[in-house]
Length: 462
Image 1 (cartoon, rainbow, N blue to C red):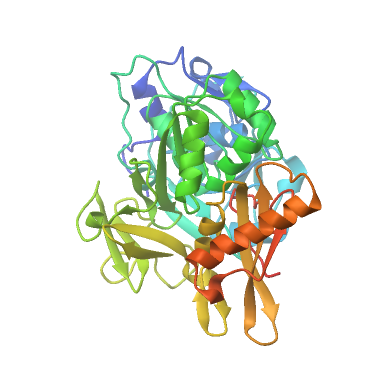
Image 2: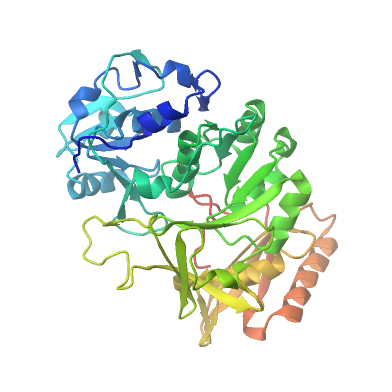
């Protein structure tokens, strides 16, 4: 959408000032905000992209970040490709988004037959004079995670992504944010924009970087605010570099934040712990700051921080100005008739609080009884010797499926007898708390669990 003047990343960043102290840190380079003025990460070729639909596909997160800052408000559409996008999907994405240019640090590998213009980008800034005046309300296209087949493409804007972020000028020390997430996915992008639009600095993760290396780099750059999935944080406190960081604020999202994980991370770092609910389609719903799992039941049915919450058939629904506008290339809409986004996240009311129990499409059918893997994992992770757990279906000729579990222990068992005793102890804990069809038929102790590119536990049928 074209207009005479629009809010953009660049003019918002420019209005917050403090350029001499702010920075963006990648795995291979650090960019000072003072160097962004009159500079280009696109080798000064930004004018060729005005009004275009542009795919941003890079191997380096910092290169993507610089391109986003430079192009928002100048291009009519930015398509953010996650690092694991398949080459065969790139043509589909290009055609669906009417892309007529690609910005990339991959050179030849980023060429698509239907896109004639490929402009290189990177972390080396080129002196360039350009008019940063925003004339487009740029569409931000995000690809959803966890899907099979062709990716879904969700349309956002800077307004829906940025929400009500404002710079707090009263702070004596500006926060330095970082996230385990990739910022080309919604979870990472929301933290990136919080830092950029809020007047802060940020340390970006890097594809393929080990947890230990990232923690060391975050600590070396003075990170104060960190976010990631509960799985990210369980792995972090197991890392030999766990003490390299000492963030006073920690935020979890993307998976269910169970009480044992909240308590363990708080005890380990002595930090303020928050957990947020968000999705690519619904946007940021709310942030829970009381250190407890779930969220207050009183939030449902009344407006809370510009977000309306509703629970229908056990599924949480959200309506707010942060909801995405639509899908690209799909006839089904994102919102229902009342303007709510059905998140597919199932909740259960216990007393005065709602608790997340799992995904609607992720249940295990045990002889007609539905089991949410996450609720079994929550029980297992209450065991003091368990650091992480993964529950999934095990095929059965009689019941169709059974529940099985894999666990990572906080410390290695001393002997086979010790391991067997721990397994039996975990099973007994499950029997004490869960109905019989939810109790795992097996507990397997493993050294690590599979984690997807999104930072979430990778689930599949055993």
